[in-house]
Amino acid sequence: MAEISLSSPPSAPAADASAGSSAAASAGARSRNGVSARNTSAIIESLKEAIEFVQERVVNREEVVEQIFLAMLIGEHVLLESRTGVGKTLLAEQVFRMFEGARTFKVQASKEQQPDTYFGGLLLEDLKQGRLIHNTEGSLVESEFGFIDEIFDANDYTLRALLSLLNERELIRGVQRLHSSVHTVIAATNYLRLSEITEALLDRFLFKALIHPDKDAFYQYKISQQYLKNLGNAIEPPKKVQYADLAYASRIVRGEAPEYPIMTTPDLVYFMNLVIRHYEVQRNRLLHERPHEAHLRTKDFYISPRTQAKSLDVLRAIAFLHGRVYAEKADIPKLHLLLCTAGVPEEKTLFQRSYDTLLQLYQVSGAFDQLSALLTLEDVLSRLHHDPSLMSKPLTELEGVPTKRSIVAWAKETLGVADASAAHKRRLAEGFLQSIHPATEDLKSLKAHLEAEIKIVFAGHTEHF
Image (tube, rainbow, N blue to C red):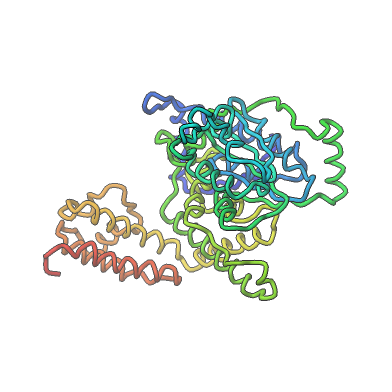
């Protein structure tokens, strides 16, 4: 099987690789709360085969297909924008056709539609009593997948009603409150309609793609060949992915499957957030450098905390697809599938540049080691703050603290054998922090935060320092 483009070269430390192999080997045999863990290797293989099948079937849409499958892995939604006739419906139908055991709801939006188009008809007997109760059978509420064509043709009243269903997976209408089975919705549009309601709706579609018509003669030929074979229709794949397997994989990448944890180290998470912030700043800088285009935007480019948090799920999803139980820095560039609009190469290039710039800076200056040391101290302070009983124990008894250039190793080298007093811990923390001379402005800021945190953690202790 050809290697799909989601792949990235494994480069994790040997210790991580060993831990990953051990965890992966035993995950299939373990269980929790009576639910057996599934064969993750088989799930990964079936998902990769599904990705490749759709990429071969829908010509020159590899990046968008990757994006959709990542969205499905983390349980999020996708918005496809393009001109008429470029195959948005075919793409969505072919993706959903790859799964077995899932209900799919399809609708073409229009201004005349009311919420009952999506939630099911109102029960007349309840309506006579002034109660809005939908019969949800066969509706989007009881479907795992949904495809909404021309979503911005729907009126704002209907779009507002969809918000909680897409985000909280709940039908909330009057006195009716019902959990929804919705896993992933793909919406398509030929245009963007901006308003207060549509802005909120756009926030529900974390993954966005702009699909351009293919004018290249080679790709037009490939599209013609596919059309001659299947007349532009989605086809049955030789092998399908069980929806239950997708749901389990989704639990894994969201960190909801304790029997199969995928590790994201503190320094990786911190560096990821630095890259995202750098990208956001660069996007806004470009906006402000183009005053002649100011009329095209109403506000600055903004990455919400919710989207930034979902970046961790995407990292875990990428690691999962490669059979790893750890994420690594080389996975970060793939976050463009979440943070950029697929089909807009300028955004992808800018995100890659942000990653490359910070990676080179941190590698050349030795900042990664400093970041790891500072976050080790932050972990120690956090434990002391949340569990005051640890104040009476030597730091060497704290479990899980890395020993390589950690605060514990530094204490042994500098202060000798540590006693268990709070006073000694404070001297140790302050001395350790002062021994680090930050190589970047970001690390200077982190050091300042830790100086303030030391004062907070030890403020309640009456010992004389």
